[in-house]
Length: 192
Image (cartoon, rainbow, N blue to C red; front, side):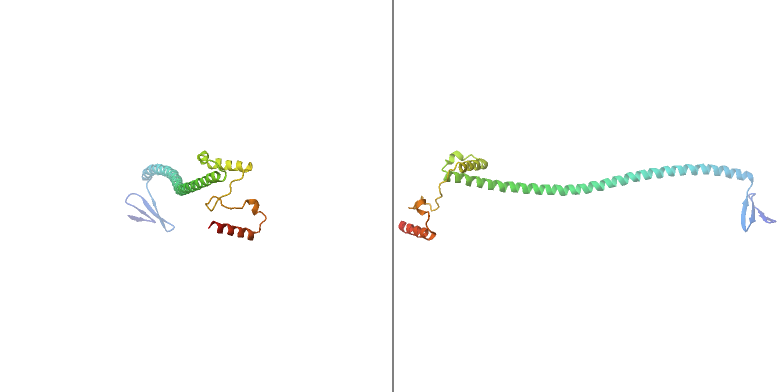
């Protein structure tokens, strides 16, 4: 490098000048054309890369949005399936409870049907064979019909001795409780 009045000539043919405290390099025009051509090729390559990058970014954004939608759908599905499992368990529990209630109500209905059947057979002197196949609703309707017609059931015999009182209901009317108790005492002493 040679030093000539404020500028330096470089070995590649360029000149370096100091302007306002900064070194500025000047190159030959022929070198500048080559640099411009290389720069132009690099600019077009940069443009292509930027276009490709923009396309890739757009594709990435689109795919990312799809991913987020899929993840949200999966989370919603998992939540719904969890609720579904809860509802399924509740349905199973309720089904078991219903089965238990049906069994219990069936037992009570059978018991009530048998009691009503016995009551009709004993109280209204209906042949048990005639009502053995009747269901609860039929027996209730039969009892209601008997009540509506004014048919009075035979009084129950709780002592198991076929009645046995010497007094008729007309003889007992108008008597005080004390008198009735005395009559019952006398009757029981006579049987012994």
